[in-house]
Image 1 (cartoon, helix red, strand yellow):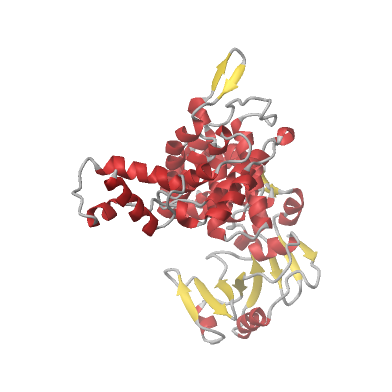
Image 2 (cartoon, rainbow, N blue to C red; image 1 turned 180 degrees about the horizontal axis):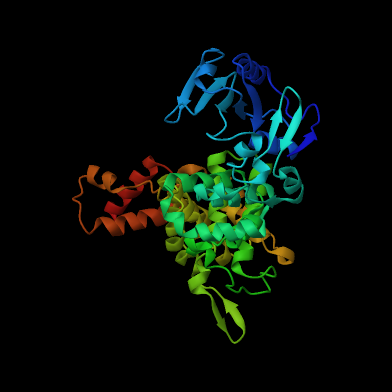
Length: 451
C-alpha cells in the first residue's frame, strides 16, 4: 500500500462534516472520506463537497453510529449497510467496509476505478491510495480496481460519464473488460442508464472524450443511432473536422461549454446538449456521395425517428424527449433564409418548436450556435442571434395556435372536415401578424364569415 502525505487542506471539513466525523469516532470508529470527494479535491475542483461518503473502520455495525444522534438519519440497505445523514445542507453516506475486508486495500478493491479508490483520513491527514489512483488521476486514466468491477455492468457507463466530465480515457485492459460486459447491458434498469446519461448531459464538457470512451468500451453497439454516425462522411468544405461522429462530439462540447458559461439551469442544459448531440443522426440514412460531392438533404426531419429511439434507449423521460425532438427536426430551419429572417419566418419557427410540449427558440439558437461552432477550422458564424433579436420583439404569442377548434364550436360551427382549412388559414394569418391575441383571432374569424 502507498500512503502519501496529503496537503492539510485537501478536504476542507465543514462544521457539519466535522460533527459527523466526530460522531463516528465517538462510536469507536475510524472514519475515512472516500470516493468522489477525494478525487475532486485532488483534481483541484475546490470548495467543500456537497456530498461526502465516509467509510468507517474498526466498528462492527453501522447501527452503533445511529446512537450518536448527530442528526436525523435514514437506514439504507437490507442490513442497514449505509446510514444517510443530512446536516446543514450537506449529505453524508456512512458505511462499513464490505464483509471480509481485512484492511483498506481489501475494502477499496470493491470500488470501480482506481481514481475513486482512495481515502483521506481526516485525523492523520493521510491520503490512502492502495491502487495508484493518484497517478492514474494525474494521467487521466480510468483503470478498474479489481475483478469486482464486473459485479455491476453499469460501471462501464459510469466510466463514459467520467470521461465526459473529466476528460479521462479507459486503460487498455479496462476497455477490454468493459467489452466483455457488453452483453449484460440488458440487465440494467432504464432509470440507472438514464442516471448516467443525465449526468453527462448536465455536467459533461469533454464530449469528444466521452464518445471515444463509448467506442473504446465496445458499448457503442447499444446506442446504434449514435454509433452509426461513425465513418459517415461530410462535405469537407463545411466540415473539415471529419465524419458526423466527430462533428457531434465537437458540437456537444460547444453546447456544454456555452451552457456552463451562461449558467443554464440543469434541465435546460440537458435538453440543449442532447439535442446537439443528436442533431445530425439523420445523416446516417440521408448522406449521398454523387460525383465526389457529399450531400445530406432531408437529414433534419429524418433524424427525428432515430433520435427518439436513442432517447428511449437511454431511458430519457417523456418531457425530455418532447423537448429534444423539435430541436433536431428544426435545426436546419435557418438555411433557407438569406440574411436577416422575416418576422413571419421567426413566428413560424417558434410555433413549430412549441407545437408539442416543445422547445423554445432560445434553446434552438443554442443548438444552431453549437452546430456552427463544432466544425474545427471551418467553423462558420451562427445566424442564431438574428433570429433571437426578432423573437424578443414577438413574445410568446407565436408558440402555439391562438385560434382552435374550441373557438369554432363556441361560435356555433359544427365540427367537421371544414374545420381543417379554416384553422390552417388562421395559422397563416397568425404568422403574418393579422392577429396576435385571442380577441384579434375571433375578429379575424368573424371577418371570414362575412366574406
